[in-house]
Amino acid sequence: MAAKEKSLFCTLIATTGLQVTRFRFLSNSVFLLITCIARISMGDVGSAAAPSIIIENVNIIPLDADHVLWNQHVVVEDGSITRMGPQDELNRPSTGQIIDADGAYLIPGLTDAHIHLLDSRELTVYLANGVTTVRDLGGSDWHLNLLRELSTDTTAIPRLVVASAGVSDQMASVARQTVTASRLSGYPLIKMMSAPDSGTYLDFMSEARAQGMPVIGHIPRSIDLQTFITGNWQKEISHLEELIYAYTAHHGHDYGPAVIDLLTQTMLDNDISIVTTLVQFRSMIRQLESIDDQLHQPALETVSPFTHLSWTMDNYSMHLEPSLLPELRQQFDFLQRLVRALDEADVPLMLGTDSGVSAVVAGAAVHQELQLLVESGLSPYRALRMATRKLDPMGPMAAQPGRIGIGEPADLVMLAANPLDDITNTQRIEGVMMGGTWLAKSALQQRLAALQQAYLQERKFTELVMADGIEPALATITGPNIQSSHRLDLAAYEYLIRGFLSIGGGQVAQQLADTARDLYPENDLSHFLQGMVAEAVTAATVEAARP
Image 1 (cartoon, rainbow, N blue to C red):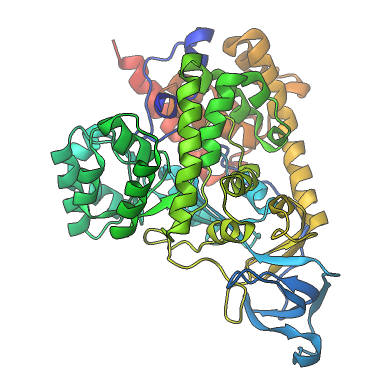
Image 2 (image 1 turned 120 degrees about the vertical axis):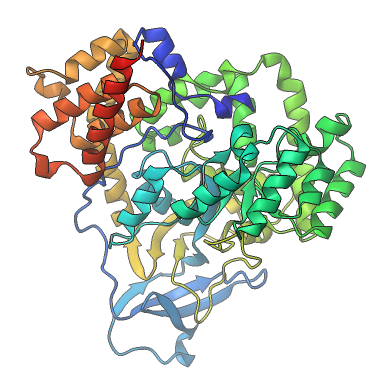
């Protein structure tokens, strides 16, 4: 949809009179990465990984079949499950951290296979929602730098996999340069967005195959399903709705059972896997029905104020006509029937949400997607299998879902009630184990509370933007006499600088960078911010020299 390709802040800049000379998109990524780089210091809110952890009196949902292993004990050592079984049969370690589950239920950690990470703090939100692995489909230098930073971070955070930014028509036309650049930058995957024609698409697939770079993502609107299959290299589709565009858009708007049968058999015959993202499609419909409801949903309390502002200024309701609602509802019904048919045929499916696009909230959307899958006719067991599937960081999704068993990684979620009885029970989280580190519910709540505190200053700024416009708001946080109530912390300055650089606002970014340097000693600036300061100066110089 067109809204996905638009700049988040285009409307904001255009309507507030900010003098920005050009808009620079991040390699046609679905959304600009207007991000906060700084990590929040959470303090000692979780138990450090011990030599051994014993989870007692827990009911295990191992997902090897639709059943529960009742009243089990689980031993975790060095980040993996080493022993499990009934208490009277288990040879327990003599020492270690003991967690009494008191009859709670244990499932593998959840995976969101399609996100857009707008703010590194969202990783905290994902973990609090039981999501232990996420995959971003719109990478940038910021993501690669973040991955390097996380590689030495001992905080319990979800595993992050990053694909390249989406390939545009122009990028597809220079296949060798695009594939080579992605490979040398360190991306394990290339995200396909668009190609000008079938020949260009097939040439790009050939080049990606030659360089050994897996391709996932969209089916370009310029090609039909047969051309996609002929390419025979893109083995994963990032939205279920892509099948609508690839088939019905080229063969008429037929949403009948024969089309579902054809699409299902085609995916099965060609070993194509699909990420669902039903929640994103439904959000698009709901935004057309009432954008106000979507921008004030309870889940938004975990969303950065700047992200919320960007959604306010750019969302589906601004780009789609309400007259499309009947067709979109018909398509959503088709997608629900299609996902049920694909699952029944054992086509590899994986849960994804497209979180980061307007009003699709990180973490919360995973549970919403699970509910939509069950509403579509899947059993809770089948939906959970889809939501716990392992990611291959170097390629498309793995064929097997997550398991709880000896030798498996200790990425686990403890629930107060059985999700096989009611899928909404996945929201009743009592604790999360990430790589062998246990975070009880209280520790997760502490992390979210710290996040809320960090949002307070940012919310003041966004309220000023909404009330007075961008220039008056900027005046309150720049210059030598800043009111203490408007003083932003480094996290907020980094977020703003990154955002304005992303849309070509180098002069504004430099103004913010200069203020940050005045307020904070040089050694307080993160290495990310130091790099952005230099980039802001360069961008401002280029803009000033432009006629």
